[in-house]
Image: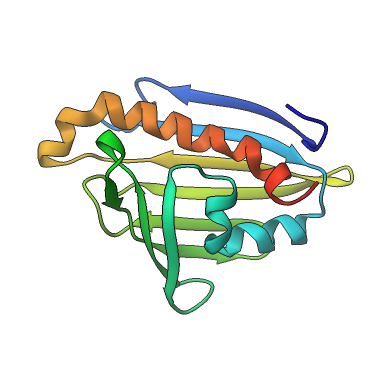
Length: 164
């Protein structure tokens, strides 16, 4: 990474997730950002910042509320680059520690969570995703698992997106 990158990252992923079963892909990634917890939380809490660090996001717009219950209309890159609806809502909002969300549109509707904790002068961020593909989407489980690993790993770009 270039000199503008100010974070340390580590990640884990489980090919056959612990308690949920082999058809439930899960992924997580952790990074330390050299910014105070309140600044990192505020950046992540405004999902309209997501395209700055999540390259799969084509468009995003908050359509309702802020905090818990906020709803976003989002389009992400799908197969062959086509737009796929991936709307979501904020299900948990506990400043400055936790943001939880769940997909409300699209073929795969993951649940996700950002967990933040102060570390030294910075913030440790853990980004996790899980999904339970249903119907036809179950045939896509290996691809969903790959996409989720890529998605959580994208948090490595968070420090640069925040200008640290």
